[in-house]
Image (tube, rainbow, N blue to C red; front, side, top):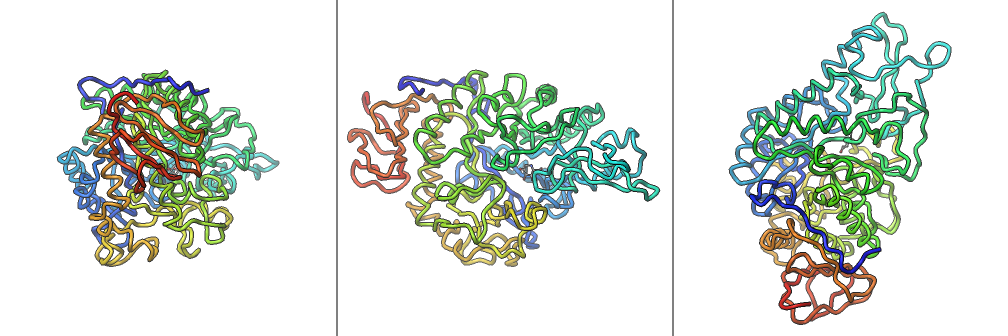
Length: 562
Ligand code: NOJ
């Protein structure tokens, strides 16, 4: 399948304006990044105070998970007012200040947009409940009569991604049992009806609100889910599939062709603005060929490569997904958008070394077998990052991965907050384990997350030795590795580069050239020999001579023809 001589070139705007094609974008989960107010939940002023550290790390942009007004039933992915800041995170003035300070440091800012559903506290949903069936207020959401003699059964059998049924019955204004509304996620997250022109107009307004403030783009939540099959057929998902989507035969509420029209419309809105604004889709679809549909030239700019994120640590699988991704994305003129971790998945440091698999979105708990320790998972975690950051295209990092943080699988059950945990009655742990506030200074309260020591999820004591200040001066630390890789990636233009597979390496090795850099990742269990006459620019773990141990990756500068 992979020809040794395939070379992939990415189009890069010669004036450098298409920043998103090669950018390293750092995801901030505002609840857990830095807490200036000291209430135990991170905030915008906290983020602003840590911009120097992000600049020092070398990222090009930040993506902020939602900080808009929200009852926080799904950690902000339940928005009550799309054009204001939730008081736990600060104010619009704090946002403007953060944006200005980030821009002053040449860090771009992407905000999260949640168009599939709102909070049940959104004015429109409250109006819908107050209004009659079939009214314009109700038609902004997906209300249907129930089935059964008295409408006592839901309209169909769809299940919520978080567990339980995807429909909730309301009481009409007169107190009688009424219609049902659809919520693909929690019952506090009613789905909008995207066939309604008013919904479309409202989101154009919301896009312009943030674009006018100066944001550089949007990460679009559940980008594959806005349009539903209008027949609302019954559907039972495959229990082994990724919970957010990704089935070979898509669910009737995911991957409907109508979604693309919405993003074409949004692209036109972004193009009204100067400054190269970008859309990045969160589309959990089953293959990179399908993912590429979201980034055709008149749609989004990026879409997360979740097939890469889900790939096992196996050389042939990695070569295959890299190869197929570059082919699929370059066919539509889009860059690769590589990612290993985010706030919905088990942190990759832990995940890549698990012996047993856990379905995406289910999380792991204290009973999960053979959860690796830090020293056990570190080599593979470092090698995976060195491999990802060497690939041409854009890459997303998730806060804390630069410290080598693991999944907190062992938190006490009573502190868990993910709706998945509650809706499945503890059957699925959910995503709290990757959302724990990150450690900055080992000797400070809450490891420097704030000054009071409060933390909405408890931080494990083992993170003290991983705090940023402990790693800062240590050349062998995870933080130093990330800094070095980001610096070299920029210096050698690898994000804008090309990929050419390198011949002559054993099956268990992923080896390629990106410009003048030879990248070799040893995914096998045996050491491999690396060229003696190339200069080592970076190694994911210390090297012994010209041997590359298992789970180690190197970046070599080619001197002559290798
Ligand atoms: C995807 C988000 O990343 C996740 O955190 C959220 O729970 C769902 N969409 C629903 O908005």
